[in-house]
Image (cartoon, rainbow over all chains, first blue to last red):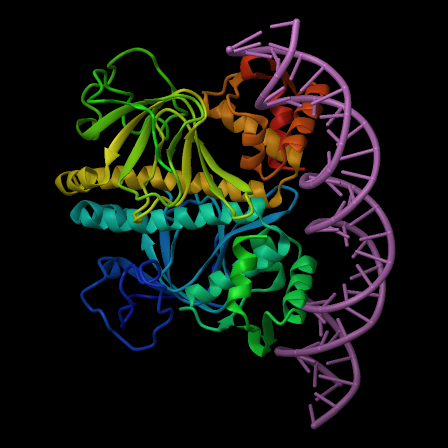
Amino acid sequence: MSAHASTIVAQPTRVVPGFLAATMPPSLSAMPKAQSTPAADPLAAITQVKVMDREQPIFAEGDAADALFRVVDGVIRLYKLLPAGRRQIIGFLQAGDMMGLAFAERYLYSAEAVTATTVQRISRAQLDDLLDAQPSLARKLLSVTTSELVAAQDQMLLLGRKTALEKLASFLLALSERAGGKRLVGVPMSRSDIADYLGLTTETVSRGFTKLKTSRLIRILDGGKVELLDHNALADLADCA
Amino acid sequence: MSAHASTIVAQPTRVVPGFLAATMPPSLSAMPKAQSTPAADPLAAITQVKVMDREQPIFAEGDAADALFRVVDGVIRLYKLLPAGRRQIIGFLQAGDMMGLAFAERYLYSAEAVTATTVQRISRAQLDDLLDAQPSLARKLLSVTTSELVAAQDQMLLLGRKTALEKLASFLLALSERAGGKRLVGVPMSRSDIADYLGLTTETVSRGFTKLKTSRLIRILDGGKVELLDHNALADLADCA
DNA sequence: CGTCCCCTTGAACTCCATCAAACCTGGTGG
DNA sequence: CCACCAGGTTTGATGGAGTTCAAGGGGACG
């Protein structure tokens, strides 16, 4: 089940961006400058760093949930499966995001690396201790979780009430926003990942990309990069009909 | 916008079920026996009780988010709208559930009473004070929010990857579970509410009910009650194809 | 008793899924 | 170094689940 062939390092030599990096500002994802905020991270003391290859499993739905994880670098997908094999990707995680923070015995979704990834592993027991010792941490976690809930609610609106093209436009804009609003957006996940995130099929996603391309709203570049040519038109598409 | 024609009472004379009533056990919703757990609720001291008629607005997306609410009795719907008028219901709230717990300036969804409803209003400022005074409260709220997040993820799976009939079966089972696993489930919301919750149309919901009825999986009774005739068959439908 | 609203049912359509095949691309081994 | 191969992607043709449009019940309330 969870045979992670990943490297486990004792403790990171450099401190990662401040604890709430991903959720507070639009996230300066993957900042390579070393220890910028040395005093910020209350979790740093109890983390193990794991480096993972792309397409590697991190944990699976149903595994004992004895740890949670924070993404330091790379992209991770969280997903749930139906018995028939249908997959719904719950979210893509990037630097600063956390996962596994459910107070349940077992993980309720699976996690896999999309790209080569570095994560911090935080044991549940140690986190509980830390929560006792440092009550303000609970408020930070509450804030993080609330943000996730807000994102989940937006995704419900998308899944339940948007058309294929609207979903795609929303997705690209969300990626762009997450990366700081750039015109050039990295899209490291496959068409089938995108499809399973948006409740579509790979074919429909592909056709959507083609349509956005021929409509001059985006340009598709090498290396999984997409250029947003008309941010406004995309935004119109994303929020409306 | 937010012209609530509701009664505001100073302070409840009876204490409502313990703080996490709805999320911890399958929820003994609406227990009419008076003050059962007198010492349990840390929020009781800062709440105002509001009694609302059915179909009344509580707050709207975009309103200043200066309070959060806990449902004492009745059913409430939370929803988001797309400009074109399409509606996605984010959730139905019942006794014990909370809403408005987003650390944002403004509400990110609208809330309306489905049935006649009693809610507790908790001002944000007072909650913040209470969180300072009583740090353990943050952990409880974290736990509540995490449960909501889990539910939201399940709903994403439903919206993205289930068929109309599977959605309906899942919905009925969730209602039943929430009510303690009874065969007889109260379904106080309209077909159109259900449709907007499941990402369908009223017509499809209606056809689904008919199909479940003719398949002998449910029976539709008066007063918005549904009897689940074959729990197993429904569960098969709900989790799979 | 009438009216309104919700629910149900029917018929036609449409968007997206499904099935199928060609295309591209990066990695591999000869 | 290049041909080959495997995987993902794109494009095409067809079909179906669910929507849309439309009309007919049925219950609650005045």
